[in-house]
Length: 194
Ligand code: IMP
Image (cartoon, rainbow, N blue to C red; front, side):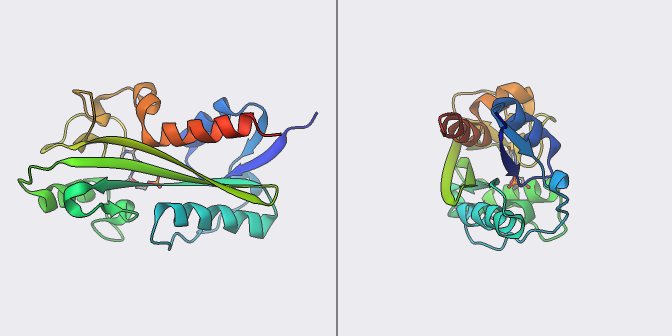
């Protein structure tokens, strides 16, 4: 029997491989594999909204089943900023280092360091839409720790751990992370989908 084809709206090879390994009953293809090199708009004001925008863009343009994700860091003392703007917190052309510096400066000596990473995944399958969420709670460190990972990893310490995300192996981070949890929900759903 041929496998149901699903586009994962990403160009991130790590994310793609991780998801492919978990969804062996499906034919998972990347944007490049469907020859989509468009700059897909991410103009929504919520993570769910952006995930839906991306998944809908592909489904409408190519008529394909698709899922897309969007992630943000939500800091309690900053009214959940940077949230949906996490990638460009310090400006349109900023890098992770700039974002971290801005975050630490906005927080200053604030005692409430509570924060969470949140991932939303939108899935369009056979005319229906489903949204999944994954959350990883933790706190913002006062200084960077570790050099693995990406984004805000050096200043985020997940709850119950002594290490920052940037001090963890990829598999350890994946087993407790926001994205890992959202993907797990997607995988459970799809593996029982008929
Ligand atoms: P994206 O939706 O996965 O592209 O994530 C948006 C932004 O959130 C990224 O550019 C990073 O700044 C940040 N981010 C997402 N996931 C993580 C993570 O696992 N660790 C640290 N930063 C992350």
